[in-house]
Length: 270
Image: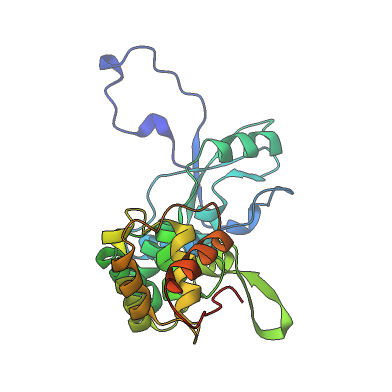
């Protein structure tokens, strides 16, 4: 047992100090149980914590359990302790249940996509390292659009497109990204696309709007679309490109700009 009373603290210098719960320590991690209804653990976070424990040792950051030894807060720390074969500190609070689990989860900061990327990049996963470098170079585009560019997606965005994986199962790219299995595709092509989209900036201040970026990504994979011809027509019509509500409207507008004064009209919408 690790008793907080034994911790070096000058209580005479602190007003109103009361011992509430004792901190315990154990290497028998089998005594702990899961709470039904708790959120699914973030395995990448578990790996990061496990690596930290192996490198720096287990710090006194107790998990919270109830009288049934059900984990109310700290399931990631517990899983990391198991993975690194470490002990764990814990505090027992009688009466806590799933309600307290939800309250504690709501008060915690949710992980962003950038948090996942940084974590996996630090773990040495190549695709996330490349993405991190790509984002630093192309910081005028949103994180989501950078993922879409590096995924070489032709429609949708990285948060809405699904990909087929083995066994016929379909996963949202956001889930793939967070699980650490995102691979990206042709990063050189992604940079080429980013550079081309950026070339429209003199004619359209909102060149980096996600709907516009997604539209151009789709057009850049269209064999009927000549990007140099498009830039040429933009030079002739420098104010023609304006904000649109959705990608279909952008396609219609771009097709109109593209075909301006052309004898042969090119269909870019289908």
